[in-house]
Structures are given as structure tokens and as C-alpha cells.
Length: 264
Ligand code: MN
Image 1 (tube, rainbow, N blue to C red):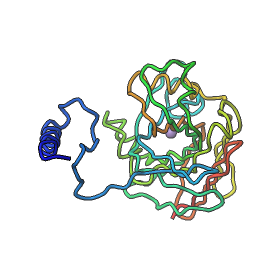
Image 2 (image 1 turned 90 degrees about the horizontal axis):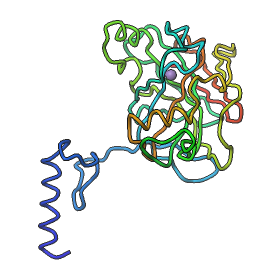
Image 3 (image 1 turned 90 degrees about the vertical axis):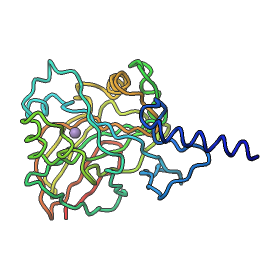
Image 4 (image 1 turned 180 degrees about the horizontal axis):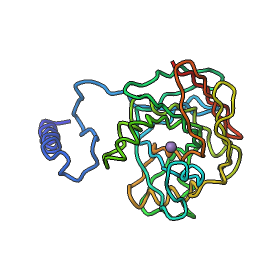
């Protein structure tokens, strides 16, 4: 690179830094020639049957997507359009199949709840994606827990404040590896369940979802531009409940290995 190009590259770097959010450019993209002052780990998940990793960009979660769970949370499932929230991508806690991961009981809560969920992982993005096209964005699926500080979520909801502290805290998303659609197909039905210390707590079927994975992707893409690396927690069935240190959770979805987590 000659001297003029170097100068021009630094000018671009300076501009991008000055413009910040106002530039309208995708944020977080390094400008050529720039260097970060420290590194930040890219959250990622193993892809079953390969040595490749799936980099996680955003974690979207859909709320109250099974009618019986919507009712237990005090809402009317027949009237509510789907709604979404996010967890930070580094909230994932990878749990390898065949192992039981230690999951620390979080701070601040006295009512820590499990929510077992099917998770869809995208390798393509888009805006205003139709329901018919939506599954074409899905790279694979896995099983995850949308762990929730229920007391804090409820308290914030009562005060009309954001859910973050109840939903989007560190390690709030224990999750298995990604299984490619090419290997296992799509999940539109099949048993989904959660045991605590061997006792069945949640037990339902993926077909009971109010909004299918395809419909979730389509709706989400109206609100956000979806991108490769986005993962979507597709909601939990009824009978959410608390765990305490020492409890062992086992999540199951027909066709996937179990997700095994010990609260410590
Ligand atoms: Mn959930």
C-alpha cells in the first residue's frame, strides 16, 4: 500500500469513529487498517458432525408462544401478536451432549425459573421475509433454556420497565450444539419436555406453538434485519417453575440429544 492509500485509509478510520452511530453504517465493523485495543470473544456454538463453529450474532426470544404458557403468565393467547426480546449473544452457556454443565444460580433473584425451548439458528438474513421463504434462512436447530429471574421480570413488568434484568443476564441461555437442517430437517412437531431431578415438569409438543418458527422469522424480519448468526428461542410451553442450587435439569426435544444442567 502506498503512502497516499495509507493516509486515505486512516482518514476513513477517523471518520467512521467520529460518525459513530450517526453514520448509518453497520456498527461494530472494523475499518480496514484499524486495530482493536483488546479482543472480545465471539460467542459460538459447535456444529454437530463437523469441526466448524457457528458464530452467534444475536439471540432473539419470542414470548408466550404456547397458549397454555400464555395463560399461566396471565395473558390471553388468542389476541396477542408475537413479541420478542433479546439476550446478549454472550449469554449463551454451551452444554456438550452427554455432560452435565454446572450453571451458577444468578445474583439478585429468589425465584429462578426454567423455560425449555427449541432454538433455530440462521445462516442467512433478510428483511420482510415471507412465511414461505422463512425456513430457507434456517441453518440448524438446537435445544436451549431461557433461564429467567422471574421475580425481577415480573417486578419490572409491573412497573412498566424493561425486562433486561429478568431475562438478559450472564449465562441466561444454556444451549446445546447446532444440528444442521441438512442432517435433521425442520422441527414443526414432536415432544418437548423438561425434568427437574428426574420429575417431569414441562411436557408438551412443538406443534402447540402459536406462531411457528417460520412465522416467527417472518414477523421478526419486519422489525429487524435478520443476519447470519442470529438464533431464535421459540418460546416455552406451560408449567415453568423454579430451581434452586443442587437441582439438575434435563431438557428434551424429540430428535435432539438432551440438555443437562446442574444449578450450583
Ligand atoms: Mn422464553
